[in-house]
Amino acid sequence: MILSKDLNLTLRPMQYPQFFDLYKDSLKNIWTTDELDFSIDFEQLRDKISPEEAHLIRRLVAFFATADNLVAHNLVLNFYKHFNSPEYRMFLGKQLFDEMLHVETYLLLVDNYIPDIAERTAAFDAYQTIPSIKTKADFCFRYMDSIYAIDTLETDTNRRKFLENIICFAACVEGLFFFGSFAYVYFLRSKGLLPGLATATNWVFRDETMHIEASMQAIRVIRTEYPHLFDTALTERIYTMIEEAINVEMLFCQDALCFGVNGLSFDLMREYLEYVADQRLVQLGLPKKYLTQNPFSFMLLQDLQPLTNFFEKRVTEYQKGLAGTGSSIVFDESF
Image 1: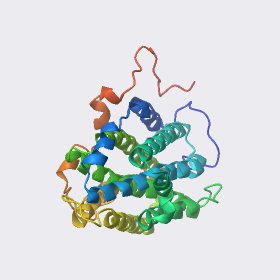
Image 2: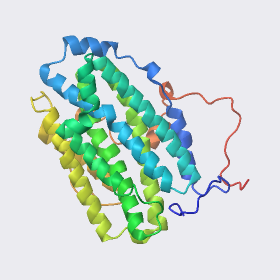
Image 3: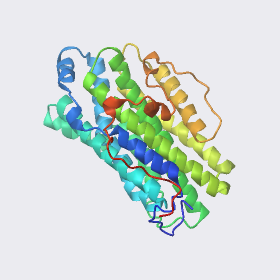
Image 4: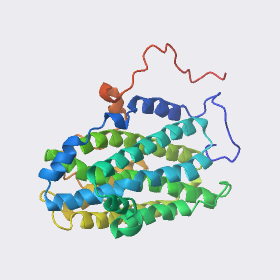
């Protein structure tokens, strides 16, 4: 059982090969910050960005500065502690690598976008000092803190709390907060702005999509092994959680767009967030709630595609070569 307290350390026999598959797929999307170039971004920030766009960008940078560290914090303290699947823990190890890479990426972003040392410090403190960003951090901490002291998942009450934590980070944090910020980046890209940030976001987007899919697959396993946990009360809490996440993200939107940015609006952003939320509900095996359409034509290329599309296309510019190894893993062997 994937939430059993009896620690399983063996990959033979392989009980959850789907997570090993995800781990192997994730290795195809290894990249480094050495491949990023923010030089054109710096010139555009100086010469082409309007004051209204500059405020939006400052808020994005402030959110990105610590966002992935929050996800990593939860992964290490909660996910790795309770998932009793060596295959999934392999994926979580790669996810932690991804999160640290994202942290490094946004460190470079802050260094390149904010030359003033005091402003850089303020960006890293934003999760405590800027209300629209602090509200998002507080939302995360609430679900982290609710299970921090739980050592084992021996009761249904504790299992439900853990399940809500997984759903929070998959559907709301990585699945809504991050996707809302990605939309701002791709809007700027559609105007020919900040190509360095857009490139970094392409790679982060791909990582986050896989992280979400892995969490959703874990939730499906829990649903199969502990079906009684998925009762009406949990369903109601999920809908409430996602609605709250949308409202939290809209507070950030109202701050980021408070001076007005031509081509974006509060209403359009809410439509987009509701559209994304419906995709998350479907992934969770629940009916859509909002029934809205994607209002952003510039997001069509980054639309919420099935994960396999990324790898069926064999996008080799992001894929590290593994040719010549001459070996593969067979799932049905015991040893």
